Image 1 (cartoon, helix red, strand yellow):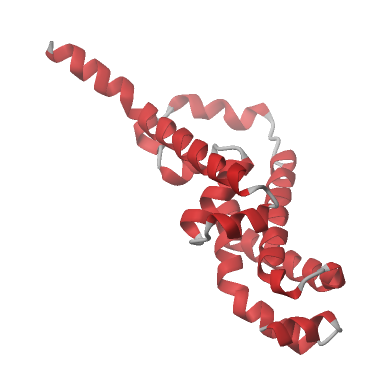
Image 2 (image 1 turned 30 degrees about the vertical axis):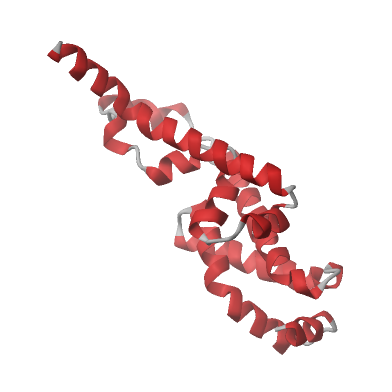
Length: 181
């Protein structure tokens, strides 16, 4: 792999293609975890490949290629989602019919929804840790954060997830509990 990275850094397009092929599944999974849509994930993936190809000369150490590439994928995914949020400001008339059926929290809360409600730092470290099986050291490399910060972010992210997941059901549990007393 190091040979392919060095060759790609020297402009070998075939070597770069082999590297992208090796990392395709991992990159796509991470991107999809952010965008939740196959078409958007493909678009972001394509942007990542193009950006990585043209920025390959900025890679200082070939051993960090995978983490460098994952960082590009995460940043591109976050940028895409922010752009989508800005572009999707819809007229108020589109939301008038929503009041007809507002689902209760337990109808639509799930792990992915709760994960998406976290800030980007917590979401990223949790996705890398539990979705990509990265170690704390690898997460620190990808996010360019100290290992202690990564550990804290994982802990706090899990706490927030637990609170969000529990919060949807806590009120029902309390009313049930008080009813029995």
